[in-house]
Amino acid sequence: MPITPLMPVYPRCGVRPVRGEGVYLYGEQGERYLDFAAGIAVNALGHGHPHLVKAIAEQAATLMHVSNLYGSPQGEALAQRIIDVSFADTLFFTNSGVEAIECAIKTARRYHYVNGNPERHKLITFKNAFHGRSIGAISATDQPKMRDGFEPLLPGFDYVPFNDLAGALAKIDGETAGFLVETIQGEGGMTAGTPEFIQGLRKACDEHGLLLILDEIQCGYGRTGKMWAYEHYGIEPDIMTVAKGIGAGFPLGACLATEEAAKGMVFGTHGSTYGGNPLAMAAGMAVLDVMLEADFLPQVERMGERLRAAFEQLIPNHDHLFEEIRGKGLMLGIKMKEPAVSRDFVAHLRDNHGLLTVAAGENVFRVLPPLIIDESHIADCIERLSAGARSFAGTSDD
Ligand SMILES: *Cc1c(COP(=O)(O)O)cnc(C)c1O
Image (cartoon, rainbow, N blue to C red; front, top):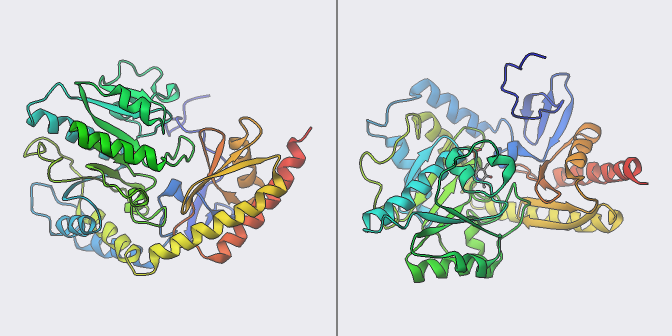
């Protein structure tokens, strides 16, 4: 077999979407799927949201791209709006999550460098973490499936079990720059940081002059029913990466920072040709227009509670299959009982029940619907999921 035109790094399945409408996707033959994967937490406004579509179309016709050598009224306006609803004083726009991670690592290293402590370059990161696929980002995870064959990786990372505060504190030494952590682990298995853990990391940063970098690429931007996942913990980071929902399908990310944490990022230290171009900014603005409407986030929170409650009702009927519910808001995961079946179950729901979900680590399947879902979508999901659980049990039992 010759190599495929698309480099074969993904095990692509038989779903081949050509059109989307709200919470539904349509395949080449018109097959209809309930999309509770949302491009892996990206399509926050579902598919074809009229306000987002119009903003992109109008901006494309007006001005798509200019260099970052010029002033950016579009970028300034979106940055200010994000800053106004976050801990941050400044931000750098990227085209993806992993580029925001790169910017965060560079910002943290430069901070200690300009403070006269260039030896403080190491970040403490966590097992099962996922920060993206650049050399920097795979260096920041201990997962062999992402690292194998790419060594030598970037030095300067220590790995500690997630939610192990004592272990993280024990790793701090004279070379530590800070912590890089997902407030809620996504790919790793939808595990939320415990309050003691996240708050403990914050406290350690304050005591030792370290930087707390939160990776909210998946859990931020409204996903949990609050604008940022850190709001559930009553703390604020020094640096934070966001992407996925920020453009709701348009490639966009950002690295946010406090003025203090960003103090090393001066002229010439970083850049991106496309980052924050007018087209991306129009998409980002349109997303916030919708997300910052008074009832949007409360509705996400309500739908998250409904969906979780519906899962809680479902589990006892299939307790040989499902073990527990994880996550927050509309970032939910169900851990399965039989070892290593989450991938098969995701495929079964997709192929036999038209329900799109995503597998994650630790035998969990992720439910990441668009943030615009209502009761009818939850009812549709539960109907497909219960049917899927019945038929899956039928095929896999004894
Ligand atoms: C998706 C994701 C990334 C990487 O984002 P890309 O846009 O794929 O580069 C990084 N961190 C987390 C937590 C993610 O979920």
